[in-house]
Each structure stands twice: as structure tokens, then as C-alpha cells.
Length: 215
Image 1 (cartoon, rainbow, N blue to C red):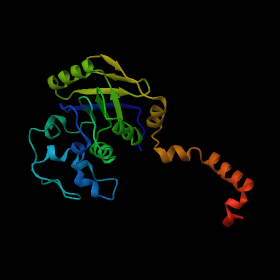
Image 2 (cartoon, rainbow, N blue to C red):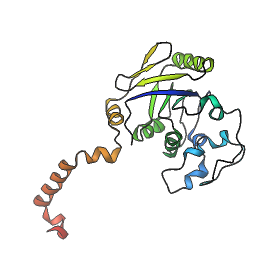
Image 3 (cartoon, helix red, strand yellow):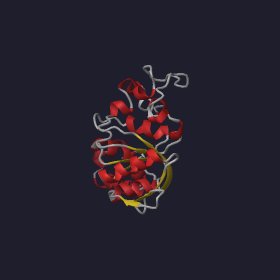
Image 4 (tube, helix red, strand yellow):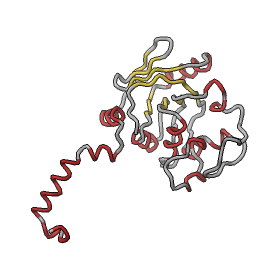
């Protein structure tokens, strides 16, 4: 996955609480056996007037003109500003894949569904928790300012607004390292390949009867 260090991104505001993973990526798209291709169906039932199906070409589908991601001013947004309990509901990783493939690299909200936040970190999507008053302030500023952008610095753990105001955020050290390095679980395991090989060789020597095909 792509490393996350800093981001100067356009912000799109999703002014809804308790957005669950079925709204982020509806259940019919879970039939896909692929890990990609979910971006066009992000918030499918909110973005489109018809019902989407897996592997459908979305380019000609009728749009809901009042949905935030369909508004011209938010095209190309990389930061999603959300309300409390974002990503609640079922534990589908597809929700994170859809957000990431659409182009979001960061979500800012007062709170998240626990499993969603875990899935996000493992797939390169930074979830930042700010307190309710700070999120409310950002919603006001985004609404008042076309082209509103935030600067996110993961190493410094800060979010800087155009006004010069800086918000700090907390993140687990292990998750921070994972995002800075751009490593998923497999990548982190491969970083220790030499130790793993040495362990397996030692087991083979100490307990050869466990590996009859190798002795």
C-alpha cells in the first residue's frame, strides 16, 4: 500500500452521523471476488438515482445532484469530513477499499466504528479523531469556503487549517509506523523474513520428525 506522510487535500463534508458500512458500499457489491473496482460504487445508493450492480459501468448512471460527492466543488477531494460513529455496522473491508479507490486518503470524524478503523489502518486510510467542537468548526469552514483544503502531517500528528489553526491528533505508534512505511500485514511480516527462516531452520534441526518430507 502507499505510504502516508503528508497530505494537502481538498475536503468533502459528509454531514451525517452513524454512516454504516452498508451505506459506504452496499451489500450487492460484496459478491465480487476482486479486491478492486469498488470506487465507482462508493455511497452507491446516495450517489445514484438507480440501483447499482457489480461490474456495472457507472459512467452513464443518473446522479443525485444534491449529494455532496456529486457537487463540482468537491470533485477530487482526498479528505472526507464526517460525523460521529462513521463506519459502524458490519466488518466489511470493502468499505475501506471503496473509499481508498475513490481517492480518499484520510477521514476526519469525532469517532468511528472500531472494526472500520482497524480495517482502515491496515489498508492505508488514515482515520483522524478530533473532538466534536473541532469537527463542527471544520464543517462550518468547509461550507463557507470553496476549495477548502487541510494539511495533514502524520509524522507531526497535526491537521492545519487555511486559517493557520493547527489541531493535534493521537494515533497508536504501531499504526503510525505502518502508515508511514506503507506496509500492510504481509509487508510487515516480510520485514522479518530472516528471523522467520532462522526459526524454521532451527525447528527442522531440533524436531526433524515434524518434517519427514524435508529430511
